[in-house]
Length: 70
Image (cartoon, rainbow, N blue to C red):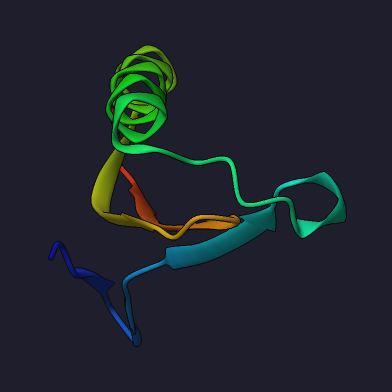
């Protein structure tokens, strides 16, 4: 985990994102989970942030991300 600091401040910004499948239908299988993680990793690389952790259940996804500085 990267902590930024300067004169008078210290910070590390992370985001916990949770989203659910429409109507909470239980459709996230291991195949879908694998594809989803690959897509999310590509999006993270393209947009300069890192995925710290990702967890899925049958009807929702937890994503924990941190913004990287260029």
